[in-house]
Length: 472
Length: 148
Image (cartoon, rainbow over all chains, first blue to last red):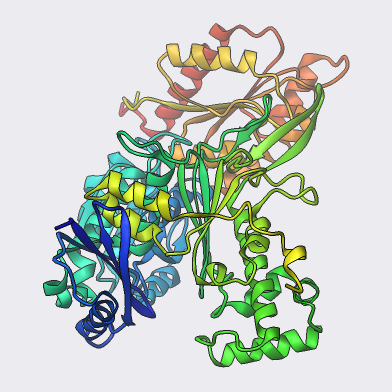
């Protein structure tokens, strides 16, 4: 009997299952149920299992049953740092890298209204940073004291100036505090791994219980991580490979979703052209960004605002007034799937705009600075122009009538020569929604997880170009 | 004198790429026992201040070699005050102005802008280290006066 794995994603809308034949590197089947975390998670889980059983005939014995979760609002986090572009930014990146949904980011001294706002946000975890090791301690101590006096009850991950840590723990008072390495131990040195690990640990030990996910514990072994972290782990495995199997090398993944568009990259991001000077905070090799204003359903209006109504209208070949009318329809029913040719055209324009803007914001850019000795090129952010692969995932992209035309929006464009987007990558689609499963399975069987993902990613370079397929 | 290792932020301000002298200075200051946060070439004024806030620096040492120093450093002390670094020690050195000007006049211009010391071309590193020792001693004396 082959070794089988059941991979579960407790999402905000659905409970999704993937049954995997680990030895055969194949998907046995998929199952889906509603998300019932807010009432009783078992209901959705049982429905999904029944759905899977119906498709498979009989459920195999699963050696592994691993879950990730983005249910009940995901892992809601607030980050606090000192200087906005330095420790506050490092804290943000640590939280995003741990798969969190950022609900608030704060810098400098917290005011009384900041603290009230944080308490009202009621995050699952607060990440408190500030100061390099041996550097500024006044601000993190002020903030620890302010939070210590507040009504906030969530665990605090403390990842700031080492010299201030002991005192900060005392000031934070009775709440649970997990102290870890500083997110910026030296000036401009990014060190987010320890904070990421601490956040995941709190998630597994505390949040899974607090959100009631462990009520379904009889149906699975462990909730390993938030779903975005599982995707990021899957992406990292795909890029780097594992002992015995090489990965795809530097790559970028874009995931346009209903509420946000996520972009992941695994690449050093160093300048690809000699003589270019990088500026600003060093970039993490494994990076996740979340665009909170680019969501196909919950933020369709924000996409149109960011991209411009004229552009969306032109791209969908609809009149601007018609775009606005369809937008109202989406607003009234965020679970709506396109039902007419017009709605499909609008969705295509929305997903193209989301992918373009999200990838543009994720990738770095260059600018020319004129100095006394001639022009110098300065780079901000990651240079991803030479990544070997761009992978698209998420329903809006996978179900697009022309995924290639969407994926092309992630690429470098002669109209924006300063943006460091990928130039000539292989384009691939994650049609089976496997990246999260790859990340989960990778925790126990990395080689099988990698080979499974490599076998199921669908290259789309060879598809017939959009223009030729019209009229077919 | 306080026992905490003093922290110095160094860098070349503005659109200036002349890094060699600044790097030598940074190495010499490190050898003299300071903790040096070296920001390198092409550093905007705001980045000196942000680095100093985060690292709780004791002094900022600005280099300018390309003759635009006066323009780049305008408002530097005000920027520090704005960020809560009212009392930070500010040094400046290099080719500070274009053309021939008497040094005392140039020096005064930068002292008026709020710099504590200005160094003309050819200033020896030993001199800078002496200045730092003297200025820090004076500050420590002011903050923690020895009881008579």
